[in-house]
Image 1 (cartoon, rainbow, N blue to C red):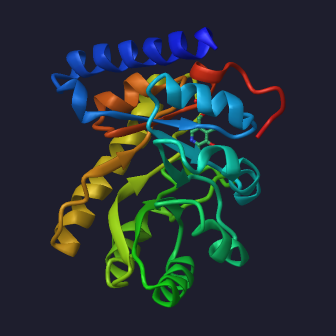
Image 2 (cartoon, rainbow, N blue to C red):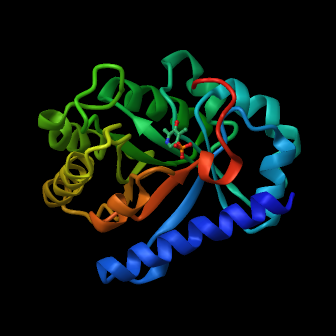
Amino acid sequence: MPEIRDNLAAVRSRLDAACAAAGRAPDEVEVLLATKTQPAARIAAAIAAGARLIGENRVQELAEKDAELADLPCERHFIGHLQSNKVNQVLRYVSCVQSVDGVELADRLQRRLETLDRTLDVLVQVNTSGETTKSGVAPPEAVSVVTEIAKRDRLRVRGLMTVGLQSPDEAAVRASYRALRELRDRAAGAVGAGLPVLSMGMSGDLEAAVAEGATLVRVGSAVFGERPRPD
Ligand SMILES: *Cc1c(COP(=O)(O)O)cnc(C)c1O
């Protein structure tokens, strides 16, 4: 699937240019492929072309694609809204949940991880856009929620994640990403540990996210093409 390889290279070029414009080193920003609705064969082609991080939004899709992807050299993350009754299942497939949106979900993960005797990387999702359709912790609560979640010994809080504002107004989009970075800085001070990961930016706005400090951009349509149906 040469178009997947070409598209991945084009995303990497955009990132490298955005890093150069922001005075950042290109290796400060990683790409996670958002693979919702994509068949496992296309994801496998992307991995063969060098993709290393895969993100799924639905536990059902993780389960369906597991047989084809489990042995490939990639790391799988969960990036969608996680219902508490799916916690046991999601832990079979992923090494990181980027979408922890409250203490209650963190507690459920913690209890299950105690049973499994393992740990999990997590990001705390913040709703920086204020759009009611989006999940995530409200910004005023973010620092206290991160501080509380960081007390769970099975969870390794690595940073914050947001789905940015969907808007043609670039200044407003950047403001939502800047807000995430500022919350990360305050939360890192409060927990007394570095929170190195800022997961923000998608196909349409990754330059704005890199300018505001993204370390991980989540890209779907720029690599796989437009999705046939809405998310
Ligand atoms: C689909 C999705 C993306 C990628 O969106 P594109 O616009 O296709 O790049 C990023 N993050 C999340 C949480 C998603 O669901």
